[in-house]
Image (cartoon, rainbow, N blue to C red; front, side, top):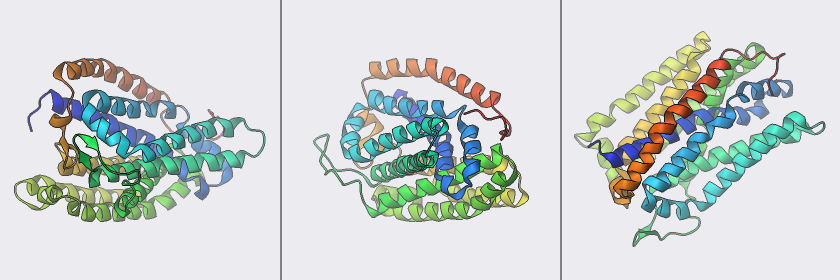
Length: 333
């Protein structure tokens, strides 16, 4: 892999999307845990994310903007292919954002806003997984334009990836509650985390078994030499991290379930990278095929170099200020 400007631009997209997935993933997962928790505990759950959740979607905007500016040909192909799931995802994010604010200020029927917070999060998480699956399985391209139909994204494989993202976010949300809460709420999160971990591992195995059959290139990456030497450590590391997570849950080490779940996400991203790189539209466009002119990429990367440290600084500061366990009596939201 040559580390040229186009590759750096692609790495910026991956970096932004990874931070979005892990940082917005835990609050989506937390919201999806609402039905499993006591109603009186939901305010504490919301208080645990209230100081930081607004900034998480900054990374989604950065990742989407970087794709549009850095890889306009891929953007022009993928957006028509994913119009429906992307629009539904955005509507879900808007819906949950409204519910987040209204549930704290509504004097009646607050449980309806809890339901809205939950359902908007489910839709957003499912559509993110479905969009990922649709990109992995490939889209029909003819003469540099999308040539498929409105619902090509809806297949058994994309439903599998959608379900996988939901259970992964649920596990991340449970890890966040273990990290940030105490008492019976933390105990409930511990109770849910173990079965969620096994559901996540089942989803990882199912997606991993199905993916090599989508494209011959995927098969070659995972099962032929020399790329198998790069790919083989990933499932091994997934197994080791899962074992460490099981032990951390059994020992009730509050900090480690969240950290180890983040490690699982990182390994899944590594697996996606092994399968896809350098494709951005599998089987149709590589990152170099889809890249913007060099001057445009330089302009984009100048902004990235200036802005990412700023975003990381204020995000890190927010998490630092609101570190530690949430006080159920103090309240934030």
